[in-house]
Length: 73
Image (cartoon, rainbow, N blue to C red):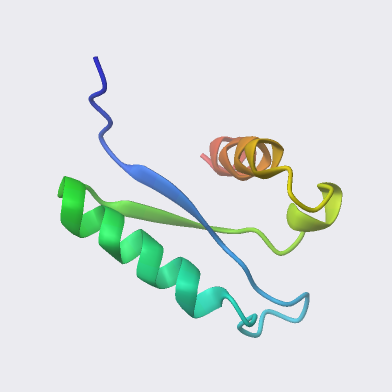
């Protein structure tokens, strides 16, 4: 049964830390998840994980974002 305690969402940023063209879309998505499920959203800086993934491989990108979050615990 699906019972998460929090949600992990990647936050796309440029290498210098400035917002990316899709940063606002990611924030909007995370805020929608928070509202829908009433769970806290943990933002993970994904500026370097996206470089490691071929475009279109969303599952691998999600895996790397979650792995990065877990390593920072």
